[in-house]
Image (cartoon, rainbow, N blue to C red; front, side, top):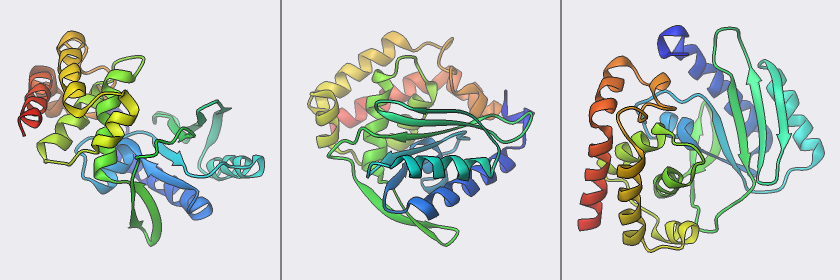
Length: 231
């Protein structure tokens, strides 16, 4: 499914409506993060399809059931799983539109940091810029399958000069910042090519962005990492 095959404006509206409904009922217990948070609050220049949260407090069975009720207001809950580290829902809200993954991460890192923002009159916590970028940097090498969106997001954040949370990177990887960045450069050069860089990314970029990403994203991201290591 490509951007041209569905109304992206409608998809963003549905994401926002679900987000606000969830936050209203679980304010203080969850924090918003991930690509959609970056799209809505940090001007990430790509489409994001899903909703990701950190669970700041454990949810009861009744609260999990309430989440299902909230999601059913917006469509059919095709899947609901309470796994060891995540609470996962898959929502189908309309034919010919992408399903929405709604995921709550139970595994919190002590060095994650959040800030308070407002959306449509609703107050919520979101991952701050340092936390957003640092977790994206780690995700680049930790995902089971390559996701070009991680590389795209890291390049975007670094190019804007977003700060890093060195303690969070050390907590998650066991490496100092420079050691991890050096490892990451090698990982990117070894694993990403023009043939796979659009994997998990092509459907959320416009045609001009896809052309640039295929030809330049890998080298541009490595350059940003090089520049960061020189500071």
